[in-house]
Image (cartoon, rainbow, N blue to C red; front, side, top):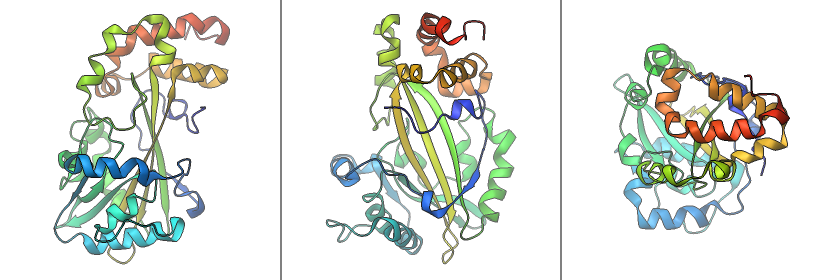
Length: 278
């Protein structure tokens, strides 16, 4: 499957807020027939990993559910569920609710069934600054701007951004990096294009006009690295982004663990795509 987004060609190998306005019709991407069929077993088996809410968040949760219902309608099996969890069963995206508490934007509820190396309990209740604290260099460069974006977000405006990394799994549910990274040493260089996967996050942000909260969505797309060969421009852009990534970006993404494999892949196919001198 060819990925619908290629953020490595937009921001390269560096952090960027990269928010852009999109029409409401483009808010939620499809591509999954029944998200609840994937999410319900996780909600039942490990609720502490995939769900969290704080007291007092139900009004904003209900407003988020109403927005989702306008696009996706209602579903069975939602009786008694927290509103944001009911909304999350209808969409492929993970849903994160941010609210201002005592002047600070905090994560007050979230459904996280496609986590990228963190859990709902890791994030619940944290401020924007705390959520981005582990991201080397991000808070210093963008922390203040991010606060202003959340506070200044007007009703009706929907913003989108994209993020990317490389991992050695096609799984959507990856709350812990340790068991995945433990398998890297066993990957043969000639298998890198098939085993390594591009993992793309497509994120959106919109205001909840009644409660004043903000709904942040995360949609995960992934595909084997070898799918880049379908598009020479994407391949070349990826090679440039990988080789030119900043130290902060590389450290946060754990690129050092994959360097030998990705370089072997790029060099094995580089002559066909004119990137070996990138």
